[in-house]
Image (tube, rainbow, N blue to C red; front, side):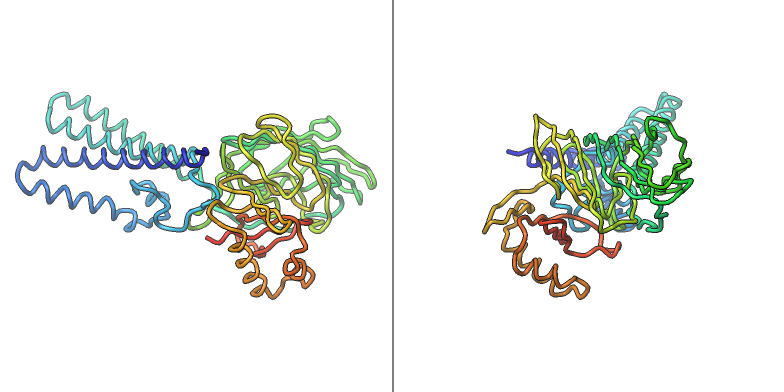
Length: 398
């Protein structure tokens, strides 16, 4: 069995035992306070109320998710590519249930033993404070996707991009950009998503100060025309970006990754040359199999090298399978077949009026070597179908 199946089994047992234990504790509490036949009716009513609470609050809100003792994904489409994301949000969600069980258990203690009131009040205060901390951290763990401001200066361009990238519970990167100055300027502006914390910036081995406002990074200096500089940026951050419904869009976990470079600015970049390709040279450390729009070479266990020319860099992993058919490599979700993806692709291009004719012809003639199913938001005016070299990206329908 692969790691995703094991994670699914573990997830099932966590939900099964935590929910059953919660209902058992509630049943005992009611039985101790209502010592007649109405105890069964009251227990059932409390069970129904607990199940209905997420609907009354809003199932996709943070509180709706925390009070949902079952799987959060029952309320909307799941991300079948990611599987179960065992991240900090997941742990906080389950910790909230554990603290709720402890709170009810403490109330049983008070009912049975009314002595030691000061101790009981202290324990209740500790549990309630812990729940407040859990709720706060749960809310800040998930970042809701936002659109980027596409306006930047155009006095410089990126020629190549080298990275030393580590993907685990968080993203850690040492990014080295070869930048050419086209016109005299006092600032270099780059995009980097706000979820990342920058540790240090150096230009030609000299440390530079910088300012940040949301996703915009600005470096001040005296940059002359035709100069080339090596800009080194080290940064890190936890990636857990969801849409308004809580669907996982961009994420980094030990097993699943979704980092489409054109929709999520996970590395420093400029949008001045959206159609200009640059050379990427990435040393990547991550468990499991990695896919990209560029060539991936596995050197040793958990270490990869990604090299090639592209306008944007895509890196992803998850519940994928690789199928070769008619000379085309299909990187598709487990449970799907190439024929289904082809059908979705043809229907998509027929409904896309703004898709260039050369791209339509490329798709209909199957003039590509690889097709990949990925996830990205459509509110960014992104197309359902994307082309990167000889690779076709099809948006996962959820």
